[in-house]
Length: 553
Image (cartoon, rainbow, N blue to C red):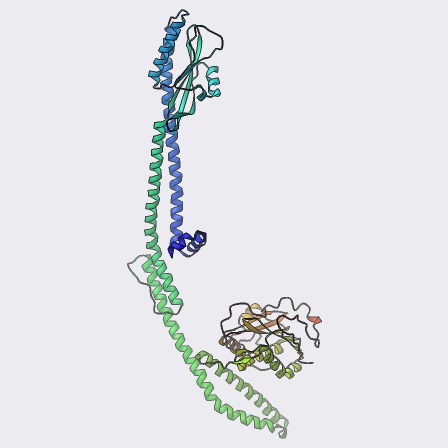
């Protein structure tokens, strides 16, 4: 497996980036090694350059001193010589001077050239003893010819058996009797200095690599000592967050990590005890609600039968008694709805809710719910439209629970729709079916939208309820949606209304993509005055036939 990973070099950047983001140990070690290598490289390069400059300057100074001694001694000899215009004597004097300078300068690579171009029958001929004239640059010769009292030098490449070696050529004038000045050049190779410099550089590189490896090993030990407890704390925290309340950190010693471990364990003990207390309290509350709800069923049934009988006979009562019988009947019905919702909530809390799935068309179900609530929408002056470009093919769902969700959403839209049109949209794709209920009422703020599914919560407690309700409808609707593996989302904005979208999976699997109906309706409220109360809303077909229906048409 690792062989394939190393061969796939194109994946290295992605793997390194992933490791960089996910490993504190790797990131710390990489930064430490990088900075260490950079510092060592900078220090060693500086040292190598300093050593190179020192070796070169020392050699140049040594060469110049040797040439200076040789030329000074030879010049004194030349001044003392008596040749009397004899060519043979001048040639012998030249040979003597060359031999003397060769011994004193320590090099046999010497060349000499007469400065003057005037013909002379007694002047010794130019010579190059191992130093080719082509190796001397015109600039150096010009400088030597121009200044008779100055010594000049230049770096050159000298030929050797393996190619070339670095060298130095030094030039200076000497005055011969009767024939004038000659320019002499002395060449010295720097092979020994180059070899010394290579040895120093190799040594520096080896020492640098060894230091990087040593510092890397030390950093690894130090980082491992620090990151292992951190990794243990992270792993233990993840286990604690996943529900394993009994997990604890091992505590060793009295250092900072031991203090952290003891604090973490104390926190875990406190969380475990509080969660157990809350779980026991929640269980007691669930049992209380369930027991009270069940115990109230029997007397409530008797009271409902009595209220029904009194309500049926209210025409025979006087006005006050008839009104009291009517109010009693309405409140008993509301109490029965509240009791039913409480029982349903207790079932959700106990985890005993079971789906009774049937192949159901969501579009037809929405049409039935709209028809059943037509009278209520007419009483509130709402025009309910059904726009269904999709959602006709049957999908496995619990029709009773989905119908309850749709009735609840539509009832809320009717109550808070301010008499404006309500649009019910049904659509589907290959993965899900969805129904959206859009009203154009007052809307809610973002803070209210986050709490709209809380139990017994109302956006405006001072607002009078005209339909009834217990404050549990949306909470139960959210539970029904999740029980199906779906979602129930809300969008609302003050002055633009509210949009609820129920999305159910088509194949019973958890939803993995976007809903067929967007939760945010966009700018559909801009042309609200042009909607009217009787005309259907035109929606382009998208995978199914379009249906429009007005509750008042």
